[in-house]
Image (cartoon, rainbow, N blue to C red):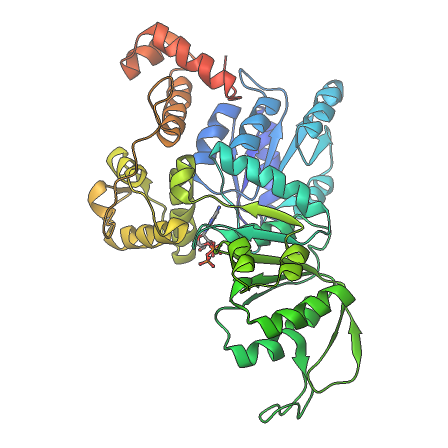
Length: 440
Ligand SMILES: Nc1ncnc2c1ncn2[C@@H]1O[C@H](COP(=O)(O)OP(=O)(O)OP(=O)(O)O)[C@@H](O)[C@H]1O
């Protein structure tokens, strides 16, 4: 499993160099920057597995950077480094979500131990990308639910990311060292589903040449995801209910009862309550699985996710192929934001893969974005500044980047963006209200 790079943020050049050496000697890929502002820009370009940042820095400090990361990529772990005098600040930062802090001076081994502990691995953890306020709220809720052992029912339209959320729940639960096992109840023929779920002994049926544990047993101590659970027939639903109630399973053709310690998650893209009313899904099973419901909205209802997801998917595919990740031109971004995405994130993924085939350089243009049956998004709700959430998120990014380019000079930023200083002040105030840290 490949390591995602570490983003090192340290303004002291000598220390930065020493830390890079330590990390590179231990074979960790690392990108080092000298300010939190530069880190914000790097975070937009590259997918990192960990941020190691100094606390005391120029205009934007490590705590402000942590706030930015918590908003944009709450799953990305952050380690802070602090001088003895600033320990209080680091403790406060831990309350805000930092994983840990390293008190300077520390030995290389202390750093390496912490990195090994918190670094996210590419492909090991399916990153749940969320940027829209709605999705961030859902992920925060999921973080809380993950800690409990409750059954969770994840609903949402096809391709919205239900399985990603299920994996996220597992990864953030105390079961994350044990297996995560998923079974797609719609994809397995009805007559095979029971044996696949509960396992079978040798000779249980014609063709059962050797004993085989079922998915429940494979998920022992971990999490079992019943994907598309609504597609299970009523007979099997009754058997499933019994296993969940008794917390034990018997293989087909077996006599031994196997005690289970498995957390069960389920997904459905149907209106399950309606299925219950129509007699297609057992009510008792519905309540057992639906202890905590989580619902992913369709992608068009959380437009702030579209561009971060597109960039994440570009990065993911380019990392796999070993190519450099292209940027999205403004026109390409506008085109992505303008579509309704009836196929949700899966459709976006297809469009991204198509664009990578068509790419001609380091920038993807509108022509590279080929969307079958382009469906214009419904006009964004008219808000105070008449911008939809996705466009607004883009605007925030542009303002932050320009602020950084202009070393914080409001006057220069307003001139560069072609807006009045008053409009810029208004926009910055709105960004602050939305919890975005603005470099002084
Ligand atoms: N928030 C997200 N962050 C990163 N990738 C995502 C996210 N949401 C969806 N994806 C990607 O989009 C694709 C579809 O997601 P997923 O399989 O989880 O959807 P689903 O709702 O379970 O679909 P279905 O109902 O068809 O089973 C996957 O490739 C997944 O990696």
